Image (cartoon, rainbow, N blue to C red; front, side):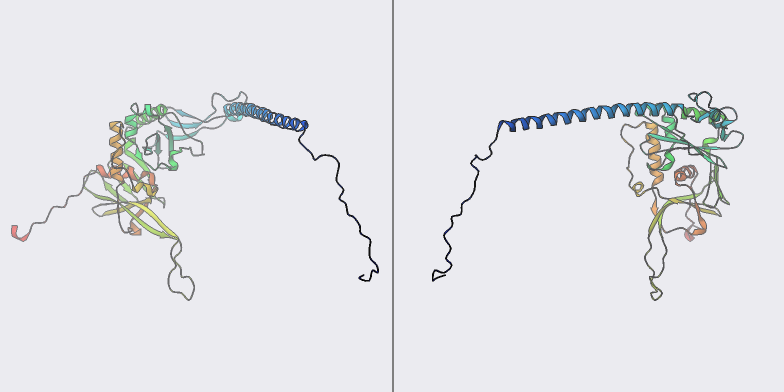
Length: 362
């Protein structure tokens, strides 16, 4: 190529460009913005219509549900001279519902047999439960209280023993799971009717331990299994707390002789009682650790009668940590009745230990 062999002629390379001007904004862009704005308005209108339709459907479904609920057969309580029964159809049952009208009634409380009454309430005293116990069963009737009801029903609230706020007994249900929630005035009328049938019902409580042995408070007598205590005679009792591990305590392996740690601990509340040769320990699970940190006084502005009952329960809840009691002395009961039995023991006279005379005074 240096010698001029194969020399290519120079070639001009040109870039082809359009003769039109670059794209600029035109009035069509304004139309685009107008269409976008109208789309937002249309979307909002559509959402509003959908919301309106959803609200109308919810209203209609609610009316339909309430109508069907009112047409269902609802259980009712019947009180007469023989007792309290649950069953029958409500007055709003549809005509021709023969199955509902023929539902057999179930006797909850038989006045021909002895029964006991125990009132239970949460700490705020806005939920109250009437527990009717017999040798065969326990029935719970619940009610809610408003602030305006407290002075009117102060005497009823004052008889109640405190239970934990999350205790299942506050959701009173019948033997078949039917809710037994009534108005507070109906609950008072029920308690009055039961007292007319048995004047000693509030001094009586039928329970059983985890093995089926009876635990019965009947006036001045407390029977715990085979042990009997006379609440008119001096006795000793105290409230304690203890804990025990649960879970298997086993070696980690066959070659390791040390025990593995337990899965956790259970905290129990106990009531030790002794009179003469009779000795027993009532035991139940502690409802919650929050019951260990209780206020030292009743709420301000409380009705005096109710405030006195709250302070009584606060005093009965106080318990000292102690070693686990012997297994042969333990009697397991339902925890909501622990304060009920402690209140009965608290009214009994205490054993007094007089100092023995010394040799100098003989």
